[in-house]
Image 1 (cartoon, rainbow, N blue to C red):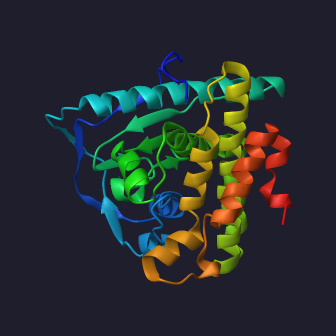
Image 2 (cartoon, rainbow, N blue to C red; image 1 turned 30 degrees about the vertical axis):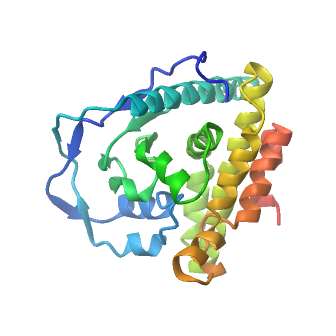
Amino acid sequence: MRWKTGRRSSHVEDRRGTRAGGGLFKGGIGTVVIALGLAYFLGIDPRVMLQLGEAVAPSATETDYQSTAKEQQQADFVSVVLADTEDTWGAIFRQSGYEYEEPNLVLFSGQVNSACGMASAAMGPFYCPADKKVYIDLAFFDDLKSRHGASGDFAQAYVIAHEIGHHVQNLLGTSTQVRKAQRGLGKAGGNELSVKLELQADCFAGLWGNHADRSRQVLETGDIEEALNAASAIGDDRLQKEAQGYVVPESFTHGTSKQRVHWFRKGIDSGDVADCDTFGSD
């Protein structure tokens, strides 16, 4: 991926020198949001998160964190990808007569406090709709490669673009509509809506790749394959099979490997928001 000459975003918060801690508070909507949206790439069952009765309340202390040269380059890469999503979605929103609200992206190490509650690096990257911020521990990129076999810079860009896709859903009101609809459904029905939400974010990630390449020629040979490999590696069926030896389709919250690949491919081939209507598709 051609990224080094790209624009850097001014919306990156570096909290890697901050250690989260503090008292306890009762789990509630913050815990629910994290459970549904945070378990992203590591296959954590949201029901496990929902069973956590309490989470650590927001407070923080400074540490003597020193980033390595590799981490500094990764942070630079994240800033460029974030800026590119800003350019892409800013243009798309303007074409529809709206203004795109650029989200902040928070870099953290180990654990972090968000407006959605306390989160650890084990949960993977996540978007918090309460503060409209994306959170990521850069160590996840190493895990993406070593645990899931998904290497390459465009695979990492896909991760970021997917979370930005959730921000777009939040701005459009899609996330709120899904949460309201889930209240009147059973677990299986709620999970089905969650899958559609995640698959749309995959499509939005592909859509970003389409626009970024057309406008700024960022793609190199093999980049799309990197992202497709990452999408396949983190399907619910594959993660469950690896973790427990069998799959439980009604517990899926993000979609199968085949579904994730399909919708990312659809987004990057089309580049049209209208083609990312996972809710109107079988």
